[in-house]
Image (cartoon, rainbow over all chains, first blue to last red; front, side):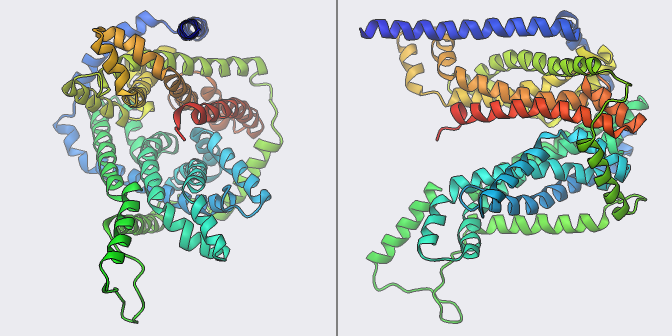
Length: 265
Length: 296
């Protein structure tokens, strides 16, 4: 009896694997045809692309001269992503508190919070940037708004999940002692989730630097604009320098936020 | 969390056992109930620092020439036209737009599948429980380098060489996808019960047998869920790539309507099309995540 059961299980697993892989192949072939993707040509181009990349994108003495400009634009982008994240944090925290399952005020606020979060999150950042460009024109503030909007969506969802996960028992305990709503939030829930919130904020800042580059290309600000400029002028050595500085700052941020996370938890 | 709890328990037992205890009081003779330790100080310092940076940036930021109040009013009028009066103006037919949407979905699908296969092979050499630690660290370093470069820059770099179009978009987007998936795949593989691998090895199974008989069956569902989550990200990326690098798909139409024709009603149609796809993907992704990735 047991033996047949096991054999069945293995056969089912194998069938599942086979069906999945087969459907992947079918989907891949159909879409390749539709999009016009040539696997062979694309793969063949990769090695020579890398050779080309390492000969043309290597920063030269010339590009080192423009390092101060690159660094100042990079700083602008980093500051922008920090500011957008912090602004979004304020609004997300309020929305998450009145909208989460454990600390929500009522059914109405819970629904509204969820709808708000998913609306802001689901519209891609490019769309926000392009729509905002039409009314706020090309400047830093436009990029700031676009990043704040999507970050608001992401953080609200994350904060709600964190509050529900971590603060359920403390809310119950404090309600039992007769604490007021504000006491529960400020003395119980917030201190409890603070470390996690910082963790999410650090993650978003790191993520937003990459998004800010993309938005910068559209809004004509920050490091994204500088890359676009060098790229269109065929100054690839400078563009390489821009990429190098972005990589260094992103990896530095990742390492330091990992370190901070270890200190907090 | 666990550590903090045990610290607390330890403190309580110590207090109970070592009586009489010296109770710490502050200047007003009240009992001190907060102990400032690193894990409490660091978040506050960081939070204050980030908040001050933000306030400084808000004051020094470039707001351009626009009057903010007028621009905000304009923005809300635009939103109203986009969301309440979406309609096509004959520039693009609905079939063209559907085809462009299909193109965007296609770019995302191909990138995800190619990236997924490559990342799985990479993850086998990255996961600490089945790979050599030197090799694992080397791959990790390369991957974090690739991840640090924004997707759009990869696409722009490859479109210099391959030419603007589907090929460049897919190769460019694949880089970030591979780096991301290698990380999460290897983490999933590392979560496998070590006993399973050990048992197979003890029976004399070869490395490939371990991969196909132990690893793939144990974490197949987790891998598929991650693949789907990446597909969701890649769909948004494909729109961005179309808009900022002109690599085709719905992003290109979006860039045309918004920066050349300023047609809000048409943007509305495009936004609703994108929202429909993203909403479906999100619902599925949340379910998969709850079911297979988060271990409650």
